[in-house]
Length: 116
Image (cartoon, rainbow, N blue to C red; front, side, top):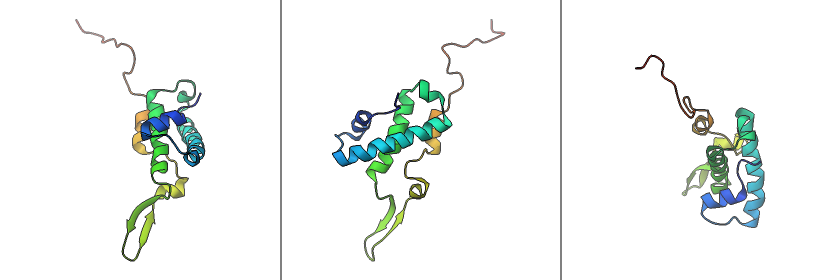
């Protein structure tokens, strides 16, 4: 079961993907899923709304800025490539990884000993 689909991505983008975007986004979703599952294998059998959100965010980052530009100047044109390009474009940020980590006390109930 995929963590996220092209339809999930289009919903977050707010428009349909072009044919060219669909081809690239399919590969990027596969990359995002592989990165997530390599660190959080529990999502392979139990994908969640958070894992879908994170997978889409990873792909939207690249889809919105396919050239990987972090900075650009107009006069005497120059630009800086985002460091994510050197990491393979699709990456899991520290904040996204934190979202995927199981939260303590996430059970259905808790028992407090010694209370009256």
